[in-house]
Amino acid sequence: MYPSDAQSHWETWLNRWFRPLLITSILVNAGALFITILEPDGALYASISRTMADSGDFINLKVEGRDWLDKPHFPFWMAAFSIKLFGANSFAYKFPALLFWLLGAFYTYRLALEFYSKQVAQIATLVYVTAAHLVISNNDVRAEPYLTGLVAGSVYHYYKASQQKIGWQLVAGSLLAGMALMTKGPFILITIGAGFILHWCLRKEWRQFLHPRWWLALLLVGLFTLPELLCLYWQFDSHPEKTVFGRTNVSGIRFFFWDSQFGRFFNTGPIRGKGDPTFYLHTLLWAFLPWSLLLYAALYGRLKSLLTSRLYQSREFITLGCAGFTLLLFSLSRFQLPHYSNIIFPFLAIMTADFIVHVYKKGALKAAWWCQQVLAILLPLLLLALAFFYGFPHPVLVMGGLLLLAALLFWLFRQPGLPGALGRSTGMALLVYAFINFLFYPAILRYQSGSQAAFTLASRQWTGPVFMVREAPASYSLAYYLPQPLQFCRLEDLSAKKQVALFVPEQLADSLLNADPAYRVFARLPHFHISQLTGKFINQQTRDSALQQQLILVKD
Image 1 (cartoon, rainbow, N blue to C red):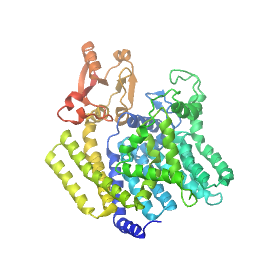
Image 2: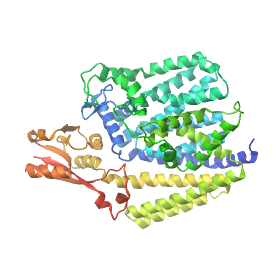
Image 3: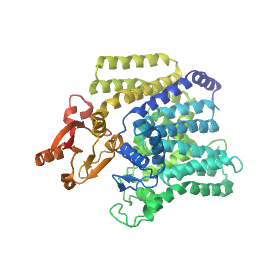
Image 4: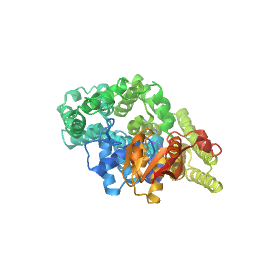
């Protein structure tokens, strides 16, 4: 079917480069463990996890001392256990997520090896560990790193279970599926199950639909999801007097099964958005870099083969079904965010790797080579532009080092053909990620005033109470990194408080300083919303005009 020399060509290249590239990719991703957690969502989830760890209450999710109903418990449980072990720091919050991301890499390899060949499995793993948005999500940690490992693992074990009698593979798949439900909700079962439905229908394996193993699997998933349902019942359903979303009689179980899933899909729930059917098509263009163009070619080839060929018995359609149905569902939804697509990256990586290994038509081979070659050239150029405009200390050293490393990578991966182009684009992507994790993020996070306020108060040994007023936007990075618990109050309650520190925006600080001589300025901190970068902020010439000011006031 494919030229044998192409297979041996890849085998030789991978025997030399797979392990070094994989280890380097893991180390670059692990560099995010020590970077300050980003506002808003990452810091919000970290503060919830810390509250859970400090209080020992693993049932009730709390934000600012109030009941919080939005996400399921599983990621918070994992982070809270880690915080109990390592303390409230960046490493503790991000470490469990990195482990589940690594689990996703393992299952990407195992799935690709099960469906294709060792070469496809190795390239799929490299694609997975270097896909842009997965690297970003290991820094800005939410639920997605957990889901990549849980979903890919569940699909792998269910596939193994489908090939044998009922046994431990079915239990393992159901356990991981249950954890995925306790991370994202019931819609995740569509991602896990859609691939099997497409696969069985095309291969006419009708008996699979009625096999007792799958009814047992549903029962097991329900059993493994029971801790989440019990927590929701105890926090909300058993307390109809609680006010959530501005009303009482709110059911946490209904929210889990309906409002957080179908409510967002149809835009009828308490949390709403605006949908665009093409959103994920252009999102993947940057989120799956440096592999996005090859991904589009792989998807086109898969869909063309699906529509024109009838040789279904010799092919697998699980990866296409898992990714395709999920993308379709997300595209039809009215609530869309870029990181939602991360859960299908293991399947996209496998399809992309299969395309890379099996490109054998001359025109397609040349196009694939040019795609990766152009990316390998553009990435360091964009990096140099970013370094130049941002204005790092010692700019000659920074930019000279980047040029030297880029030249070294081009020399290391000077092999002709697609393997060399793949090596160059992988190396350049890792150079970009290393720059972002070890230089760029540490530099810009000096402008995240909440975490900087926590570090300032700790370094200056402030041991008194620290307050935020509810009339100002909350800073959850302050809540997470502050040694003592952050407290919240209303403006009218401040007059009765003494010997306290207060974190407030500049405008509010000015009014407090003018109204009460008991206040004094403890620290003035520049502020920018780091997760929404703008050219005005990145450009060192215009950065000051993009900044706001946050103040720490002390009331004697």
